Length: 239
Image 1 (tube, rainbow, N blue to C red):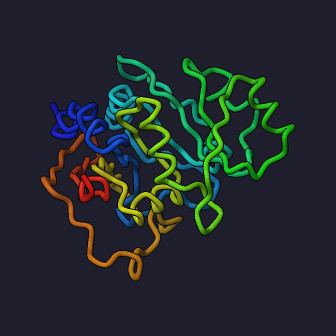
Image 2: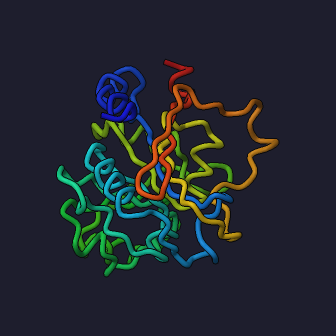
């Protein structure tokens, strides 16, 4: 058992203590921190063994979250196919409801997706997505017009989501890190240099102090390297 699996076993008590789910940030990047060559163009970085681990991680979480940009570019299913276990609840951050009604996570989802919006979308779009099988959840926007992440996590806590796996895209990953809403990270390092789109933009000037991993660890899986560790989230400070 990996340490992050043991940390996830504490998710229910964490929810009771903080009122929001335990957050895992999990993504793959190249050695130079790139996610892909071009924006909106997916690039497969994970090898077979790390893909299996990703699906295993999905099965250990109550829900999995991506931004609408990932839905538009990758059309993911966000299900567990390469490992045994339950499917997490798919959640999409989509302020203006751009998610296609024929997206695979809607059409083939074993669990109906929750699409989080701020209400900046037409009534017709909401009705179309609901008819396709999605549940639309309206939440407040932050000062930048994006979905308020604290409001989102409070909403998920009220819906008994004890653990949330955040997979991307880059803007979503960055937002969770900037607001220090991450409890643990599991990162796949692929042994190549892309020189492409960075996963995380510079955080200098936003964080008062560096975010240092606690209890870090690593392991080679196939050609990839998995790195993990815990982070001091705002909820842990406030709890």
